[in-house]
Image (cartoon, rainbow, N blue to C red; front, side, top):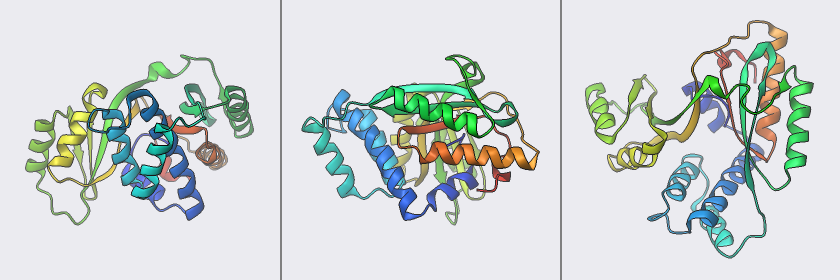
Length: 247
């Protein structure tokens, strides 16, 4: 769940071990619970919940799990999570934004500061890197073995309200305004496309590469530590060559 969507990284994340999958289920479960508490349990009238159910399914969360989370939140789940976004720099000045849902902000802040300090980065103040990112809806469609026609895909994406698309052999990355994300995702789903991922992401305007082997190792360890923390929902960064990290 870290970084701006690049197809090989998404594939790697979808091939996690069972233990890692359990953490993914926990994270998306928190998001669903918060969406139910703030907007109700009916996905037809709660677009955020509808999007999160689609996200959970794309992450192979069983439907029974999804329904249990919704019912628990509906019944007044005692856990009270608040969203907090942290900003900082990884090794070599890589800009990073960390989105969390936490029931203990002191614990979360202490953990994040520890990860950044341990792995060659530093946690900064609010606003220190957010100006380098723009919020976008990012939808990645599965194109592997689909024999998709590029002109038809382009037409469908723009008809759905997308701003841009980038088609490769294995996937199609579609971007849109965050305000249009839910409608675009639903329209593409209605057209029969299969999703690798769909989320509102923080997309960097500039990128930073890490070429040193030691710094790449530190960056990989920092990303893994953040991914393993239950409070961390998403990590957005402007690392240009994440595919070079040995993870």
